[in-house]
Image (cartoon, rainbow, N blue to C red; front, side):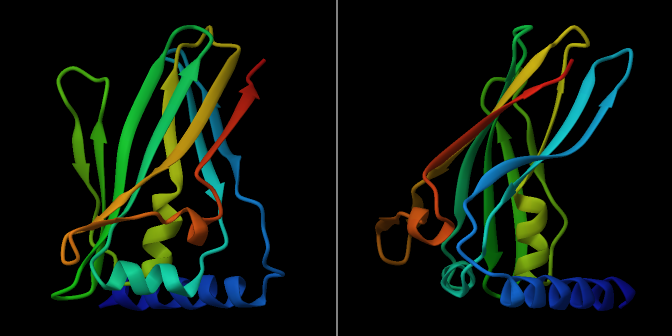
Length: 174
């Protein structure tokens, strides 16, 4: 009950911030957090996107949003994930699924169930990676993949709703 109330308040705040924002924001990858340790450098990025109402409608209709997210450093570290945000239309909850592309053994993670689409989307656009402590630069890339509308037997291109097909950014660590 407390989590639903918390998600509701956060969802309302995100909705109001989207509604009151100037709009027309150019999607970009921004640095959210960086922390160095003996094991490596842990970096969290976020994609800044203005969420359009049609995006929520497509999610609620059961059409997922799919991203290919990649982080690669000058030290040779590479992490590639396929990330999917989908809606369970039977109870209108949202889930994020990550699947590794280049990890052995294969990695697959399913998030908690979100009750608010905007709260789920806020976590969906965050990408975390750890690179070697000797890394000097790290390059992040996000590419929007076609989404399968199984009910219509078609692929849907979400790039017009999200404002990008592919974005990237390189950060200097030292």
